[in-house]
Structure formats: C-alpha cells, structure tokens
View 1 (cartoon, rainbow, N blue to C red):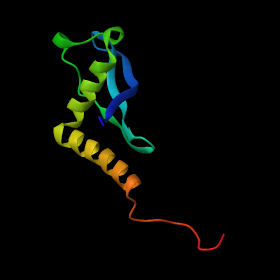
View 2 (cartoon, helix red, strand yellow; view 1 turned 60 degrees about the vertical axis):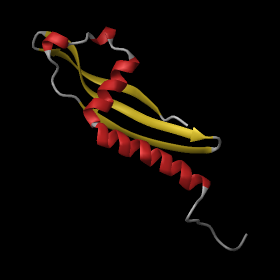
View 3 (tube, rainbow, N blue to C red; view 1 turned 45 degrees about the vertical axis):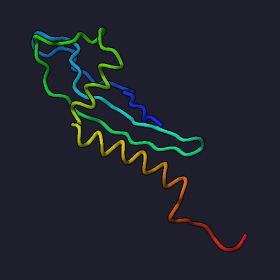
View 4 (cartoon, rainbow, N blue to C red; view 1 turned 135 degrees about the horizontal axis):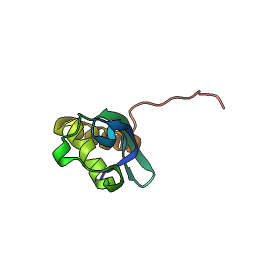
Length: 105
C-alpha cells in the first residue's frame, strides 16, 4: 500500500505586487486502500508569500509541484502523522474495535 496525495484546488491571488496568479492555499487529500478497506485525510494549507526569484507561474504548476508544496507547508512530522492516520483507518476497518446497531431485526 502506498498512500496517494492529491491537490484538488489551489486558491490564488490574481495580482500580488509584480506577480500574477499567486497560489495562497492548497486543498489536499491523502487516500489509501487495501481492497475494500479505505482511509482518508483531507485539509487546507496556506502558503507563505512566494520568493519572486523562484516564483512558478500558475500555468506552469504541475500536480507534483502542488503536492510537494503541500507536504513542505505541512512539515515532515504532520505528513507522517497523516500517513499514519490513513494506515490506522485501514487497520481499524479490517479489525474493528467498536460496533453499532440493535440486537433486534
């Protein structure tokens, strides 16, 4: 199993000083599955103001860039915690420790 990071939406400021289409926030999700067992985390991360010297034009941003920026903004510890959470969700789905329902049918 390998968890999959995706960025579904990027929020941007249309004009920021001399820069155009500056990405300010990324909406992400992390998913994984093992057959019928699934795990998912999602969230939004804000980005710091870009460095004009290393600015990537909006039209040139790849999905891989967006995922890299997401992970960088979250930090290694949070990335690891989210990945562990998804793995735990799958494990709990396989081996539940709680149940709900009624004894009558």
